[in-house]
Image 1 (tube, rainbow, N blue to C red):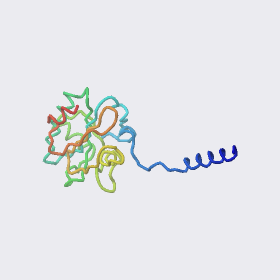
Image 2 (image 1 turned 120 degrees about the vertical axis):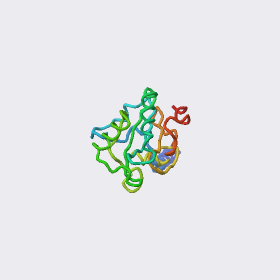
Image 3 (image 1 turned 30 degrees about the vertical axis):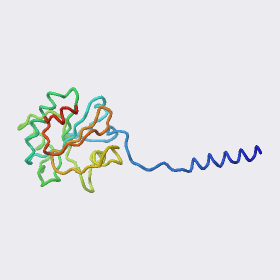
Image 4 (image 1 turned 120 degrees about the horizontal axis):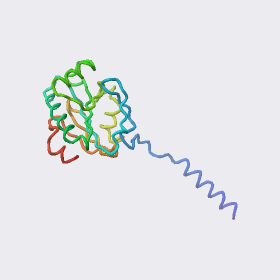
Length: 182
């Protein structure tokens, strides 16, 4: 009887070890993703733990480009609670054709931008950057699937690196829906 019990226990344990966990590529947080600044320096998203992050795909020649002013105001007024990270993208009507130096000069000269800006990334399609794969896929962010519809779409991540909400391009950075989410 003892041999039977040991054999049964071994079979059960072996069976459990053969059961595969579901293959969901969900990351615990956005902090594991590597991004690079407009100046070519690594941005360690772990530095923003304890603070919300607002990721915004931006462009210099877009009808929404004046939102830079209110993104800067949001940074100035609520920078203790939220980090603004602009992500230049040239996928919507070719509205961000400039080099890193040209983008930086445009943003500084015209809008006084002092919040973080990444190098130019694809936010959709076959060359979509890992950051936007995470932001737009429920299988990775654990919250919702979305599609980046145009420049200046905003993704708000909480203090623990979890996606909170997506704001469409037309939502002003100083809109109460954003301010109340901080």
